[in-house]
Image 1 (cartoon, rainbow, N blue to C red):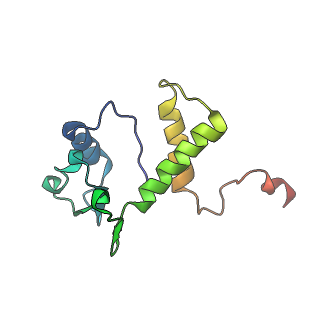
Image 2 (image 1 turned 180 degrees about the vertical axis):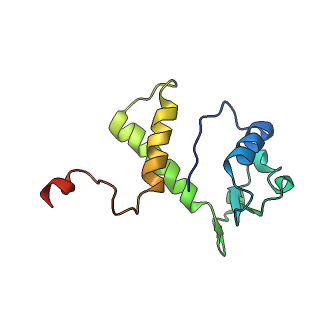
Length: 119
């Protein structure tokens, strides 16, 4: 599940507050890249593994960041390809829309385009 929120910066304090608020303490694994802002994740008592992209590492067993990178790719393509420009005021709404789409992408009851009309 993706939880996306607009934050002002990516310093350790800001990311730590976001992770504490967004991630359940029952989660099995938090996988991040090597950004220094995530250094307190283990201190929150969450299972935390780091993928070191700068040394060419992209997956280590079941540890990867591919899912969240897929989400960011879809969000960026949606903004650039569909909406073309998004103001800071409305960015949280777009992030909510794309989070909902991503989190429900495999739900067979979700309406996809207009194919429901022909059924």
